[in-house]
Amino acid sequence: MNWHKLTKVEQQEYSSTVSMAIQRQRELKPGDLVMIAPWCKNKFRLAHVTFVAWYDPRNVRIQYLDEEGLKEEPSKAASGNLQIVDKLIK
Image 1 (cartoon, rainbow, N blue to C red):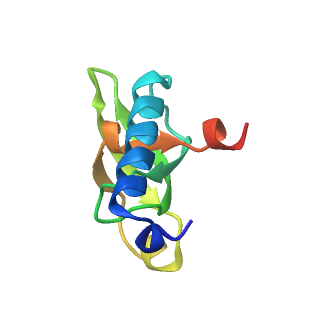
Image 2 (tube, rainbow, N blue to C red):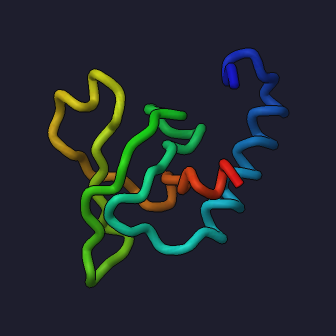
Image 3 (cartoon, rainbow, N blue to C red):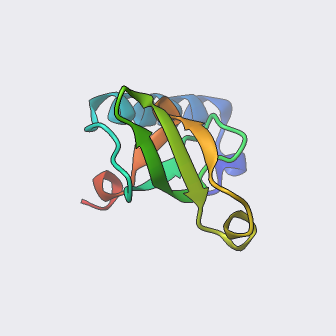
């Protein structure tokens, strides 16, 4: 998908669809493959979940899977901005 070629209306519709999918998905687990939501700075980057706090499932750390991201340490992420990829494939 080329985000920048979509009209503002198409971007809003797609963001709304992704937001609903994220709200309905199961809680994240370490090892999950995720995609960053389109409204985020790092939109559409792939990452895997490296940590989910047992006391707060919103406390998540991810490792980006691209060349640049693999050189960095895992970073904090908002669980509401992460879409589980297996839900996209099915």
